[in-house]
Image (cartoon, rainbow, N blue to C red; front, side, top):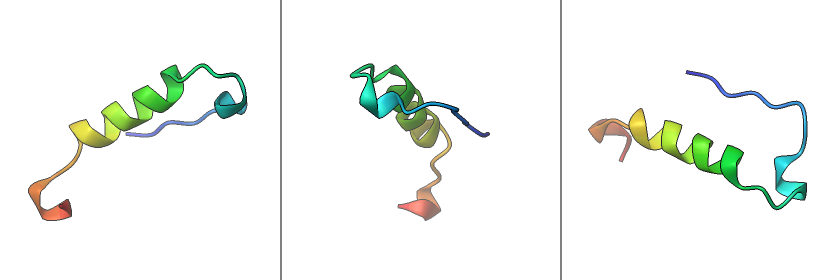
Length: 34
């Protein structure tokens, strides 16, 4: 899985991209990575 952006979502106050990233990380986490 990959996520790429061509803008700076942290400057807009819109946290949807960050939430998507966190959801992607959580969905792909394995017990070995903890």
